[in-house]
Image (cartoon, rainbow, N blue to C red):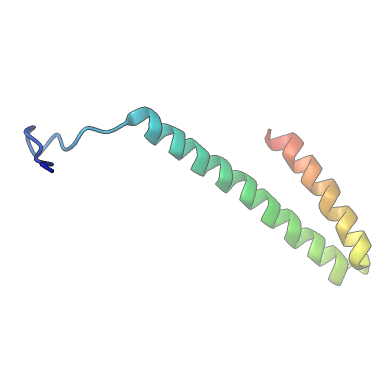
Length: 74
């Protein structure tokens, strides 16, 4: 298995740029959606624990804010 690159060192190895951009876009999407879900979860937990909404109230807050977040970020 000969993996020697005959190109100059400055240019480096060839890259699969479409695959690189696809992976980067997936990373950005997962970061965006994951951040939204974590923020909504924290708000729902605060509503349930400190706002007196209880478990089911927090669940409703979570579901409503998650739906609103997906609508606004999509």
